[in-house]
Picture 1 (spheres, rainbow, N blue to C red):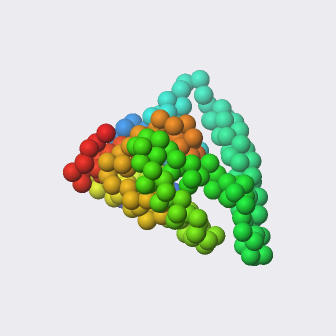
Picture 2 (picture 1 turned 60 degrees about the vertical axis):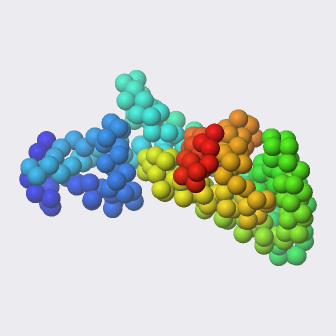
Picture 3 (picture 1 turned 180 degrees about the horizontal axis):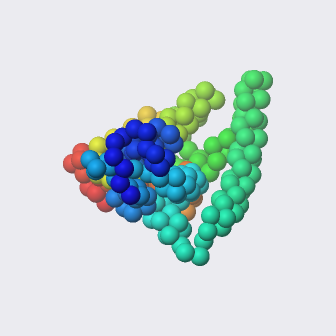
Length: 267
């Protein structure tokens, strides 16, 4: 299909910029999808600009739903190119997965409501309630893992000393900072950013700085060890995989690249 000009396409096609604005993704993301064969535009203008027809937009909608559900791009390619799966099959699968996610989010919302109520009443959260808010992440267990891996009781004692004095506001601030890094890593993965480029390494560095700021001094070589633990230990892996499939491995590799940038080991 070849259509001349960039505006007023008679067949309903849209340029890459128009599609990016319509669905809220970047032009770079659409270019990446084209390069890996996930979403190839059906046509080009005489000048060589990408043009997306309604069928392309339908495929993009399916891609975005699967991405929102945490599927990696290579799996989405396989799913969408499966000749045995029609649009109805995709919708049924997505409905089931979304229903399961809604149930999990409702449980999380109930836990957050408990935390808010406790804050309004100026009640200290119990350890059980704190786990309900922060999930599987336990600073004390985190420090114990560090002690076991490196045999360093200094890190464990320092983490215990710091966290013992944290208020609810401190925990919330720490959680928000961590969530921002995770969101940045997910966005980098979605954009196809390699782990050894500045954006991914800078996020890994912020992750390291947060550990040093909130728990114990975490030099690059220790951070590399933590990155390996995120992949090797199912408890840590699950925490990151809940945000994005493959995120634990992506973070580990970005940590290694960042350590190499700083002159440390890559693991």
